[in-house]
Structures are given as structure tokens and as C-alpha cells.
Image (cartoon, rainbow, N blue to C red; front, side, top):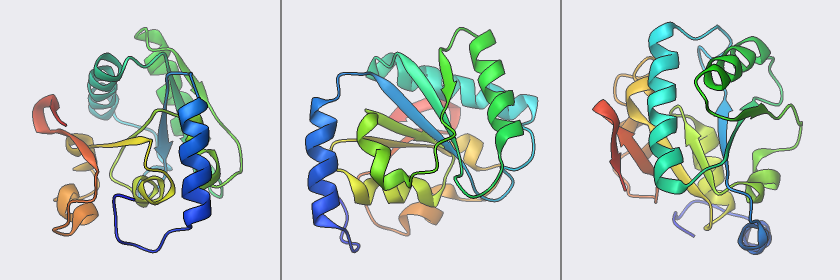
Length: 168
């Protein structure tokens, strides 16, 4: 596993084997955390689109799946983002499922989005799913999102840095 935090080895092994069998090129973008219950600003939508397009290009993604938090209603922002991305030729769906992220992560090749603990949960749940954080849009919530998530550690998280630079 890419990190030293407590993990469920059985779950990681299951997700790794299922992820290898998954031929779909889907990207999951979770919507959760402070501020996600409100609608996105035009600037946030543009940043989200820019960063998703970078990942779509580099990872050959066919579909973006928006995943609102399972316990909190983020449907307005999820529908707003889906509508915006579809209008801008990004094939987008919404997953309203209630399963924990750790049990569905194997359905995706990439999980990418705002700075969030969800990204860390995915890192703990599978070694075969690429996890990417969007730095610039995360600055609408955190002064230093890299420090918030990494706290000085290299845990396998990838970044789309300020200005749309893909730090692989």
C-alpha cells in the first residue's frame, strides 16, 4: 500500500484484483466537505473542467462519475456540475449510491477532485486506482491544500497543480 496508515488488507486485495479486471475507463469525482453543499461559482466550474480535461487526456477517460457524499445532500451541486460538464462535451454521470467509497473504488481507474479525506480513503482502499487532487480549485476551501492532505508525507497522491500542471 502507498501509505502507512491503518488499512484493511483484505479490502485492498479485493479492490486491487477487481480493479485489474475492470476495463471501463471511468473517473470518479467525489463531492463532499466544507462548502460542497452550495452551488459552484463560474470560476470553480471552469477550474473543475480544466483539471478534468487534463486527467481525461492523460488517462484516456471515457466517463466522469460525480459522487455526492452518501450522508449529506449535495445533489444541487452535483447536478450543476454534471450539466456544466455535459454542455462542455465531457460525458458525465451521477452516482447516488450509498455504499462507502472503499467498497466501490474498484469500479474506477482514477479518483480525482477537491482536496478531501475521500481521496485519502481511496488511497487506503486500493493500490491500483490513481488518485489525483486538484490544487487550484481546492484553494477555494484551504489556503494550502497540499499541506492539508500530505502533512509532509509522500503518500502516492498525484496533483494537478496551480495553472493546470499535471504533477505525475
